[in-house]
Length: 292
Ligand code: KIV
Image (cartoon, rainbow, N blue to C red; front, side):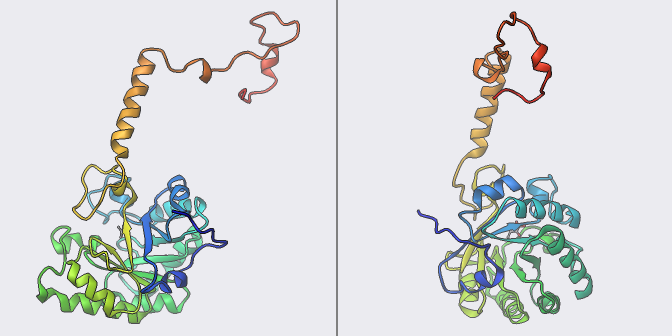
């Protein structure tokens, strides 16, 4: 598929304008080099707090500190130039009051250079979403399965599989849209409910474990590349990079142990010097740059 070049980075209003349009494509990104690889293809990259589990081995996203999000967020901004970068507000950095949320979100925007933040919660976060957007911070909301509430939910549980749960989730979707969120992640909800939410609200829904009819989709990059040891049902592995890494590392180990790596093409020969006798290293002291 051809990629249309774009002169400037996409913005939150660009994403909002895609409601009912061409599907919005998104992936998580945590480092500069993977950000650079996916940047030409996706519309926005999320520096998700899932990095706590994927990169740092935490059991949930709850322990992730703000500083870690800022460090990864800045790396992703440095590695990209086309996609909107959205940085997750971690647990404990925004729930207490709109004031505290603003202070921390402003730090994220200033110190990373990202174009928007994401926070979890529906109706209960409406006041904060309004407060941030009124003060210049574009907010992506996140409803349905909200991983930072894992201890309240009693696990990572799919939401809205019983119709009795629908009204509360519909209220969440409506309220975050009215509060000014430019898009909303709808995670781990029954497909029928995700379809209904997408028709019901005027901002794009970004599905993960939701429905193909959402206005866009997001997956954790490592999950879709086959790098994660366990993946939920909603993940499709588009590659098997975990197996490829295992194969490459095992081949490297064999070659090191068999002394076939490094080969002649990977080592540096002496410079040829007129009149120099073999083994003369005098000139090699002039520079410590490696030969090409
Ligand atoms: O933290 C994260 O990666 C997320 C997405 C998967 C939606 O919130």
